[in-house]
Amino acid sequence: MQAEPQAFDRVLSSMCTDPHPAAREAAERFLATNPGDPGSYPTVADLEDEVIDRLGEIAGLADPHGYVASGGTEANIQAVRISRNRAETETPNVVMSESGHFSFRKAANLLGVELRVVPVDDDRRIDLAAAQEAVDEETALVVGVAGSTEYGRVDPIPALGGVAEDVGALFHVDAAWGGFVLPFTDHEWHFSHAAVDTLTIDPHKMGQAAVPAGGLLVRDDDLLDELAVDTPYLESTSQATLTGTRSGAGVASAVAAIDELWPDGYHAQYERSQENAEWLARELRNRSYPVVEPELPIVAASVPGSLFEALRMDGWRISRTGANELRIVCMPHVTREILETFLADFDRLESRLPASVPGDD
Image (cartoon, rainbow, N blue to C red; front, top):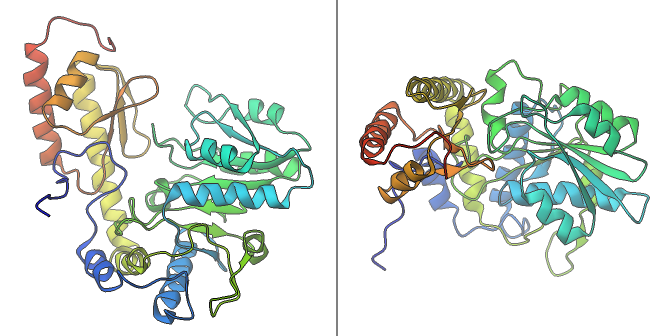
């Protein structure tokens, strides 16, 4: 095979990044192991326990339980599955805001639950009043977002947890991307801040582990029992994961990355990424484009659609928000030099386009 993987030097839209060298080496060593069969592969099973302990430390949970999933989508689906299986109604519903990840739509479709989507407020966080109106006695799960994929916004997690508690619903926080940057901010987002039952946090995003390495954390071990199925032909008697066979690469790389970077390395990386996001937002604003202030290291700006397409044709891997804004995620591989090159191309291509207004299509 002659194909080579995509280089990261022009990737500005992904929430994955180039793995830390230690994570890359660990992933290769454990590539053929299967944490889904802990009887046969006890070393990687022990490493998975270590990952969960470390993720619990990051997310404020002293006695964590969970497992290393394929990513945020699987973890979010499993959180919905837990709530559905615990529900005392045959018609459970899940409440989240329109900033919630599309994986919850997959979960609702797969699991046959009603998904109630409520609006966001002017700050692009869940509208608490709308959430309170949406929940009822059949609500099985309320979802909070801690680092939305479009704008990096953080819902008011303690208050939203109260909404769930009022109707006896479980409370899930999706911190798949934000979980490795939020510890260095003043946001309240995790188990120590609210009555969170389940939480998604992905080492293969800002954690700099190799793909796939997602994370599902649960406050109480009995929540995992809702997922368990018998595994009579394995040495372990039951399994709570969704995928079954899983490569140990993600598990080992997560341990290696966290060992190398938590907490000081992640703190330094967050500061670099946030500074880059604020610098880029300022540069775009200086060019008279409307910009959404980056609360976390994500920049969204209204630019002409023709310019967006020209940048894509020039090889830049960029994306749009649901409102058609340019969206750039300042991941660890996105350096100031890369952003300066991007802006140089931005200016060059802008000068060649017909006169337009920001946000045109």
